[in-house]
Length: 150
Image 1: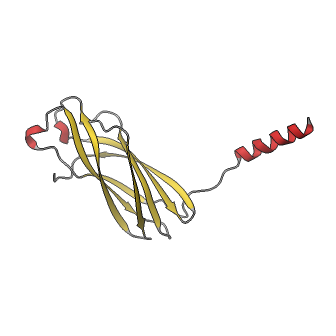
Image 2 (image 1 turned 90 degrees about the vertical axis):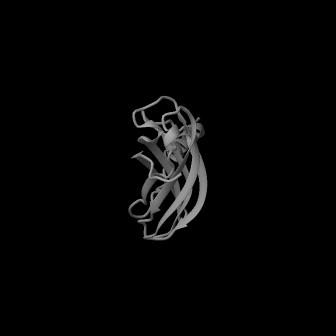
Image 3 (image 1 turned 60 degrees about the vertical axis):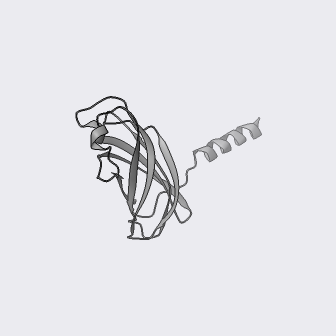
């Protein structure tokens, strides 16, 4: 009985133990940019569209960081809906350096809006990083619109 009680207490303490995986210093600065636009003649159509995004990361840490994964999805109302989408990366960003990665994701225009498919959308992005032996995430919520281009 005593062994059971000690074992249970040990497991409880072990389960509550945490490790500090936060970066040393400030977190990287992150910006999500929409690179694509729907052509003028089709901006008020409904249906599937491909959206081209870039994520720009400025490393504000004193050590290199690796961008491992970017996950994005739209939240709230907007010109289109972006279901949860995730893509892996292996991009090393040196201290003080800024790098941009890009990707395509499938979106859907469900209803016509005044701005059409080129109007604003609110995205939540979750970025996974590694710095040394630590892994950490940064979550950003950003209202975006097309930067231009096709």
